[in-house]
Image 1 (cartoon, helix red, strand yellow):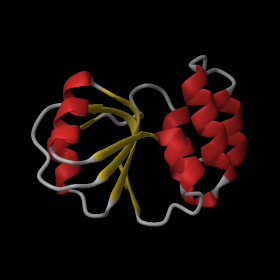
Image 2 (spheres, rainbow, N blue to C red):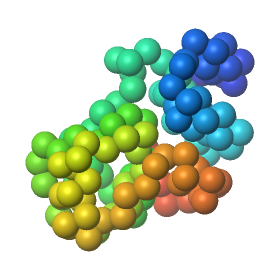
Image 3 (cartoon, one colour):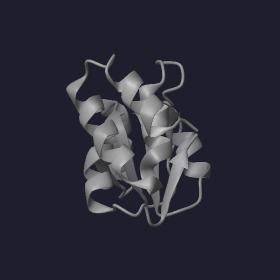
Image 4 (spheres, helix red, strand yellow):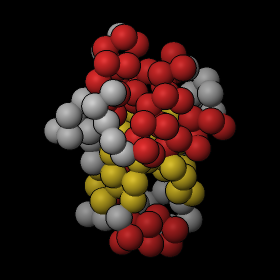
Length: 120
């Protein structure tokens, strides 16, 4: 895991305002520091997740440090927090009764990261 100094150094190279805001919020809370670490890496370290991969995870809230893609199906009602969602993934999640939320909003609401499973 990266230190806050490393995260800050790598954050200076990012130009996406949503990504920058999410990382700033995440690095303030020790429960979310791993997400900040994943987001400040290069694009290869950012984890995009298919619905089939999310469906295998345990927990009521799944945090994805990347984009949620539509491959597969979701069979349970969970809350999915991510940097972004494909349109088809949004449709499938809403159809399954899941709650979708931007990662930055989940970090603001759930500062201690209680009940969150981070997709790695």
